[in-house]
Amino acid sequence: MFDCYNRKINYLRISVTDRCNLRCVYCMPEDGIRMLSHSEILSFEEIAAIVRAGVAMGIDKVRLTGGEPLVRKGIVNLVEMLSSIDGIRDLSMTTNGILLGQFAVALKKAGLMRVNVSLDTLDENKYRILTRGGTLMKALEGIQAATDAGLKPVKINCVVKGSSNEPDALIVSEYCRKNGLEVRFIHQMNLSEGHFSVVEGGEGGDCAHCNRLRLTASGKIMPCLFSEREYDVRLLGAEEAFRQALKNKPSCGSMNLKGEFYNIGG
Image 1 (cartoon, rainbow, N blue to C red):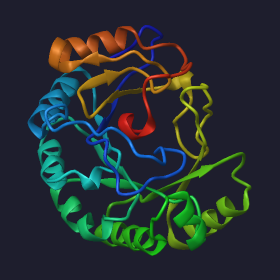
Image 2: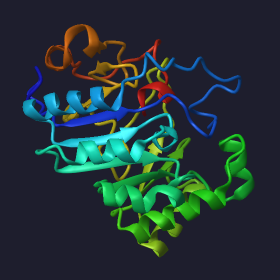
Image 3: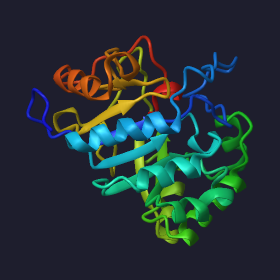
Image 4: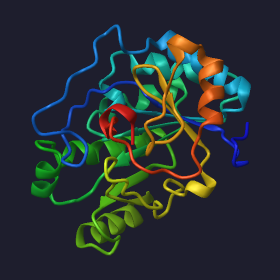
């Protein structure tokens, strides 16, 4: 399917939860968030039905995000449900890696194809500060578990403040080179100020070639991360929500004063 600017839209990013087991400084407010209630969050059956509707309209690439998707109870079951949908050629997940050691093999068996793991530094103290309490070794063990399970290519998402030549970024890059991992450098974004740029080593942030829509954990289809437009699948139905999101996808992102990375899925 194509939007009003003749961009082929085939990619759906799904936030399965607003919850996370880390509190990264650029994602979560230090004093916490108002969690969605159980009734607000889409069930696995609802997510699968929405994905089937999207696939019928041209979606063939699906990524699960959060919050942290691995804290969603039964996430392996959702992966299995989605992997059984004919027409999906790429089923992936973005995770902080902390729980990957526990889930990697099961995710692979359920049909997950690959993962992106967030890793901004290899300094244990800096990692603990950036994530407000996370354990670097758990993330590294998760990356190794994903590699061993065959969730390849394992891609590393490294957030940088200014440049991929920053000391921590260079160390992460060398770690990836030595371990056969792909690295993507994501310049730190700000939704309310409209700060974003093209991802180094990836496709995100390139508005002229954007191919994605987003589904929030509460059932809103968003045409753009840097836009406040959203279309409720529970009110409109999945097909109509997709159609409206497609019709109203902006030519370029601007800013978003309503959403946050933890509840949209960055």
